[in-house]
Length: 351
Image (cartoon, rainbow, N blue to C red; front, side, top):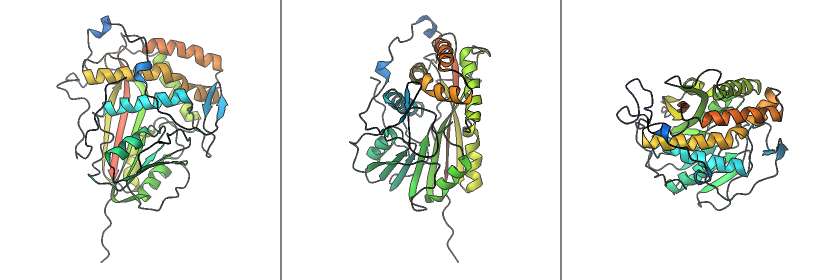
């Protein structure tokens, strides 16, 4: 099991830099490569990196051997079965480590009263935040009921589709959070607008989203390599599916357009594999390598078969090459992880 990740208080006004040039990057901003890592074997087992929580699951639909949600009007392209739940919990550990032990970077203050977690998945973020703020009511929503029944008394889960009209009262949340809605939302402007409408004046909204365009700073990931091809296919499939993977790049502008102020965008490099010299990023990279090896099928199967017209066999054969590329210790790949947050301004008093 991975080392425990401390829940560092997240109220600081300035987020820590996830890539401090004194410890983990070169002067050019590239992640420093651990030259000794090329001589060591990558871990052969992935089980020690996955965290599993007991949960209750509603009936779903089955396709290509995986189970998907059956609630709501929007088709979510990724499964909700046991393998996917374990992968999501592993991602939570990885993202928290990438963000230096913090669950979020928005300076929400020490005593929020109501927090909404959109697309809560297994609910692990909501549970951790409920423990962090015992006086707050934390609500996690998702189209799949895969959350545990044993939760903190101030945490609850609801089945809801974030793309539909929200049932909550306007201006009712101090903090609204989402992580990893990329390639899941058809109408981002509507979603961002609803988040603004349901945030209290002075409250915050934060998005943590992957931009899965794989690249390398040293040219070790080349066009034509399977991982590079997967990235291209994922973007093509997402666009055809009606859910563009490019959404993280648009969030800052969308938030400003609806009225958020103090909007900040932080773009972090998320390495794939334990090639960084920095120990924290090395562990992040190991998590993401395990995530790709175990989860690339979940990320690809429905999108590639439905949007690109690939057969299941073609997808599976292609992913064999992708996984081999991920394990190639000479390839120093990464992709971008966006953390974007903003504040709803205080209402001006009526004169």
